[in-house]
Image (cartoon, rainbow, N blue to C red; front, side, top):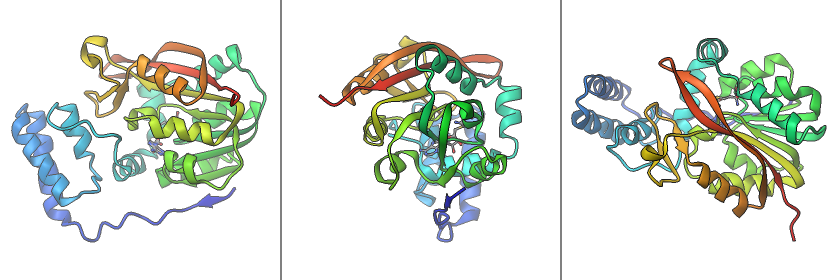
Length: 283
Ligand SMILES: C[S@@+](CC[C@H](N)C(=O)[O-])C[C@H]1O[C@@H](n2cnc3c(N)ncnc32)[C@H](O)[C@@H]1O
């Protein structure tokens, strides 16, 4: 296995004490329903920590008190999943009923069974997608922003190559051969604007390659014509129309677009889409 480590985020300039105080105050105010005061406190958090390790920007957006960011900050995603890496599978799979990797395998079996040469798993987390797709791909590369998630995956010895880094950055800048299958299970909820994601997927895939990914969505009356927004649990929801536009704009043709339950949150099913698409030959 090869592993590319990125330098850890330098947090030395941050006033940690003031940041913790402001963040805890913001959370308490939000929980108490005082959204105006919570928003002011989250803005203080952002001023103290512009890299946004705590996800203040997505919290502001989820309360309807801030601009919709174009994505969750790298620092936030890395911090969040570093913190949850040890318990990730017991929380997500056992408690929240997360099953997207297996649903992806089923969808692939129906419309694009492979086998595949090179597979790229973006936001691979603890390697659940690699585990269920191992037998249909010769070589599997995983990329994730969270070093601790990559550590868990590495221990499973399922992937052939693992990288710590941003998925979109990898798609545009990695010095690797193109892929035959690209997966991104439960990763789009951390990316809002998907232009760079789909452009990169087209760039780093061979003609005829398959792209399989899941997304979360919200009812039409909540999305109200928007391409994406931050939902109540600080994750991005995307409209089906936006996904279809992005696929077609970047040269992919949809093979299957299905409604799924991504997970359960507070006992309620979280709706989403599972998409399998193929990269069209360049005319
Ligand atoms: C909910 S987990 C899903 C993990 C795995 N794909 C699965 O299906 O079990 C989301 C993962 O995506 C990673 N992630 C989110 N945004 C990312 C980005 N921009 N680049 C790389 N990894 C990202 C997180 O660190 C986390 O490990």
